[in-house]
Length: 358
Image (cartoon, rainbow, N blue to C red; front, side, top):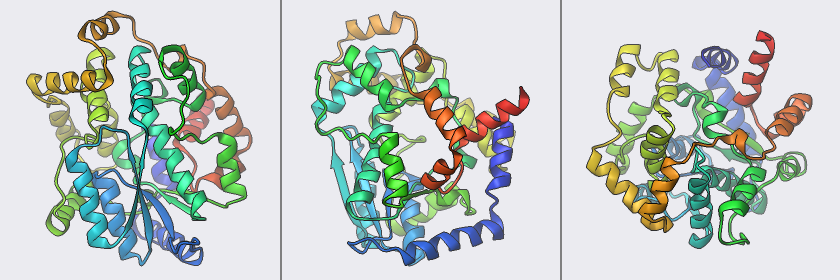
């Protein structure tokens, strides 16, 4: 993972080169305006990264369409942050609401499946919704706030999931058998989006000298943005998974990857990172309240949850998936991947590094 980050930093340098690359992307976006006058679709959650991304896009003279996914667990603070930024910057906002009975059934299924990244249905839906609006509005660019320098690359055993896996887990553990409002996008649809609709997936923070703490300070001072706590804690189910489910049941602390990436990119010293990793996710009272809130919303009894807790852990390789097929396709047809994304995905670089070692 250290080697992976070093390779990524070489391939996507910041400074003057990164700035030039980003300005080149901006010029292309300005040349390709969608039918509704939007230059790009930007996913927003109320968090620091996506909120500041809207600021950068407007400063660049672009007209983004902000897209938010409502899975029934968005915190009030996060929702208010989205409204504050979009209103002050005069950005149109589309909120896609998944029928709660459907998303409840999916999230509940992943808990019953004892799957580490139980928030996978939300991640897959966010991706699908962004493509949905890009295709619908004839927008050529999807903008995301991901930053490998601050987030790193999570091991696939921690977070990998795909549509095949989601459908299998839902069929095995779910109650509702039909998903009408839950959005999905297949690999075939992404290829259609790339080659026919010419849609590109862009991550500006790969190029820019982005510093989260500075961005957060500006958001608070200029836009009345409110801090919600830890990384991805703007969504209460995501917070439950990251602060309770993963560390307590699976002994997985995603902060290890995030902080290691920040040490490698010199945003933090190793000593500062060690101090942060020693901090608890929250008080015992707060975490138990979060657990109780989540179980109530998902209609999982304490007895049922105790049984789940005591049962053996499962991982992505314990359920059918398209992982090997997607990896083989991605490496064999790398030009297709380059057509879909404006960068080489970290999973592909990771595979290449592992192949070299062998």
